[in-house]
Length: 497
Image 1 (tube, rainbow, N blue to C red):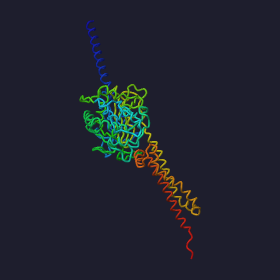
Image 2 (tube, helix red, strand yellow):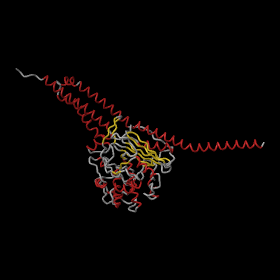
Image 3 (cartoon, rainbow, N blue to C red):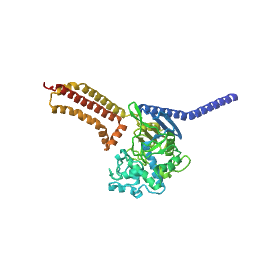
Image 4 (tube, rainbow, N blue to C red):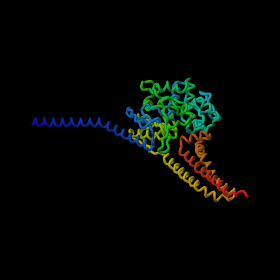
């Protein structure tokens, strides 16, 4: 009996050991299995983004549980494969760097957020007395009353922050300071100049010494215009449907608002800093703890704006998300992260698109929440315009082909009636030539050269339709005039003998 009891105990002991080993294996394997599932979801979202937006080149940085992963796709404008160290423009994601520099000045006691800008930067003035009540915080949060201005799309855009500030003198406010959120790139140029004034350093070198170097962002540079091409930066792409063309960036004033060029490796360091405590990887403190918390204290509504950040949390998301997109003519970028969970993502792409949809999907693949739909609204827009352009050209061909018959009918008619029948073609020709300018006018641009350039870079399908109208109507008009003249000569009586 004793031996039976001993045998039973041994069986139970072995069973318990087996259960313990199985439990330990499950505990150890579950996070790995979950991480693998998350990685598979992120890979699927990346592939879907490339399919929908036809991104020629892209780098995606994901950060979860302290582990960073960089995924790359495609090629640069020169045909080289995109890698972790491929420089790309980050556009308006640059605003968070400007905001950080401003907050560093606050921490240094050089001014307060509620100080009027004119007291710190006397050269700042507008043609509107309300500007005297604009505070530093108003500029940081886009509540200064400054609206988007044609200055940044000028045919000769400003370069240095001081130049942008000087060009603002004739401008007026669109709203009382502190009352309305109006996104303003010019406002962030003023902030860059504010940093230059109080730190006694040019804005680019200031960021190099006080932000990039402490964070180990050795490949990140600052440009004052969006079309500047620092060493190593390949051109991005303009897309029209499946057509990809590597072109120079649209000339824009970008000082303080969108001029930074960075890499996936450097943006990984920037992302780690955002989910940290205000210190660099080496322990150097860039912002005081309370200032760093304020840095990410952004309204949940996308209609409001914090210090260089949007609140991007969607309904139903458990953790607050902070982020910012950057859109240029030939590059697009996005960053999104949760200061609570430490999960985040960065996208750098060398063509237009919607990178914030990919950053959101990459974050919610780990933390859960509401993903963004992966759609490209420009596809139907471009398809309609290209289709209309094709029909216009077809109509133009028909007008040219039938111009001989038209001339035969009109040669014997009155000159006035003939002219009236030619007027519609002349008007359509003028409409086609003016179409890009009309489109840019709706964007608030009045300078003709800048208007045509902006539409050519951002909405090439509009230019294509305009060219089709000019070719079809102009060609038809020319064909009718030539045929009419020939018919009149043929019918003219010969000399009497």
